[in-house]
Image (cartoon, rainbow, N blue to C red):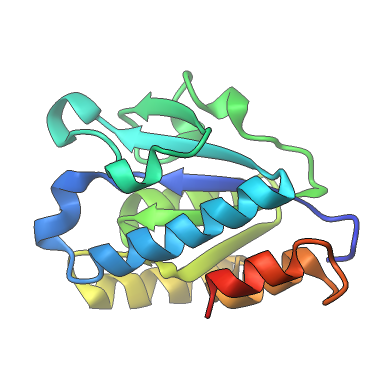
Length: 177
């Protein structure tokens, strides 16, 4: 990945109804907020997916303040829903950065389907979770095996910046302090 990298952020199913069931929910939301702030500063496109909002409710309010294209879906993979799959940039020079819930279902299937299409995928490990933490661990193992890059938010942000001389370096480094 070089200085010409383009990124598209995919926020998968961070819906408020998951909060009582996922111990790391607040951490995922806080980490995703930081990523969305950085994406806004760096002009990276963000797509937000909601799994069956009629039954599961909508995305956490802390994430909807951003200017994001929102898509409802019933499929587990964001790529399998006709209303949202055309929004995902399938140019192989655009790196897809994935965050969300649940790691072993919707995050996994979305990443897997992108990888099958030979898309570059980064999964932000500190911005995904599952009800059972072991399921997250297994999802990360499988995604890594399938070819996804697994990174922390801090690693992703500095990868996007490339250089401490970047005009947004100070603002973005404040996000992770």
